[in-house]
Length: 144
Image 1: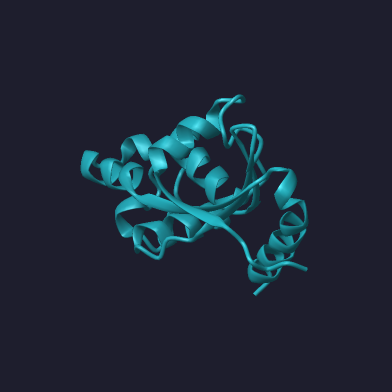
Image 2: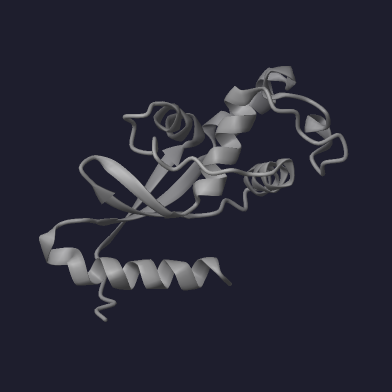
């Protein structure tokens, strides 16, 4: 396998990712997955603590095939736009028992303006063998 990747790291604001996610024609429109409230709380804690997880994707035809990070994107969207309550016993005390719209304006802005790193490999005919290797590497990283 050829592990010599030409990757692109993009810093995207949470608000941009959510906008794309909720649009079926957006770059992230196809990465919806089922999550639990605990997963949502863990994702929010990581982002709120500036321990921002990375998203890995293959980019083709102006869309992302997300290999790792679907849960992150889904969790953010469900909390910010879905009216889901943060757990009453969650670790972020300012969020406990609240929906996104019930948070202070400062906390709403802070969460929406956080940036996530999206690492992408462009999909084109010359990259076919590298796509398989990239999928393998991302799978291994995700299972750690």
